[in-house]
Amino acid sequence: MFIYEATNPQLILIHLHGFASNVMGSKVSLLRERSLQGRFSFFAMDMDYHTTTTTRTLEVLDALVKGFSQKFEEVWLSGSSHGGYVILNYAKLYRPHRVKKVFLFAPSYSTLQLTIEEVGEENCKNWLEGKEDLKIVECETGLEVVINREFAVDIREKGYEIISDGEVNFPTELPYEIYVFHGTKDNVVPVEHSRLFTSKVKVKHYLEIEDDHRLSNAFKDIVEKFL
Image (tube, rainbow, N blue to C red; front, side):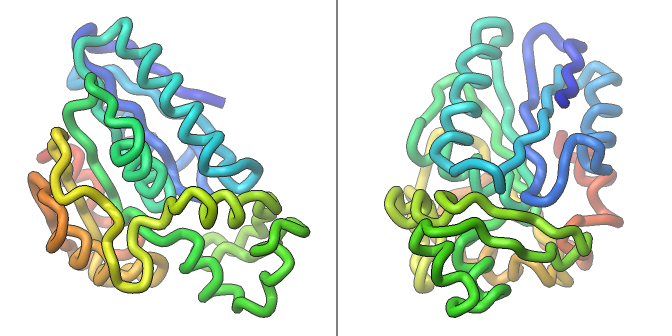
């Protein structure tokens, strides 16, 4: 499923939802409302991250950006949680020239490591070796998620973790306006990760909010002020 609103002929925002979410979520709804006001055109699609690999997801995102770049003068990217992880890797590895702004909402910088910490390394040993899928229960939604057996091997082989062993694996500066928003009550992605990232990488704006991982209370205000 996808959502597409062509309400602004110059500018489009492409949004990537989180790992165990879809385009029916509240963030997509609020961004769509903002689009319908004419602020930007808007595109979001169900990404199904857990059924594929980060490499394939990046290839899909690149096709979207290149395609929309033929129609719109400017592209903005936004991502929440693991969607932010994908966007960070895309900006780092692909360096898309039509992208001007990047909005990250409680982004994951270490999806693989956070998954290992949640499940336990012994419990995901076969998955880490690419031998079997991994079944987990998503801590916020309670939904069971099955993660593709190639997912972890792909991340390790390609070095997609943005933060690893306390080190930030990202250029100190890229030609994009980067905005980072993170809740201090986030129990999924530690806010300390965003603090470390923004201490090493040049960003346009970093804002901590007294809120949860979903930015449930603050997201509407963030959209109205920054987007």
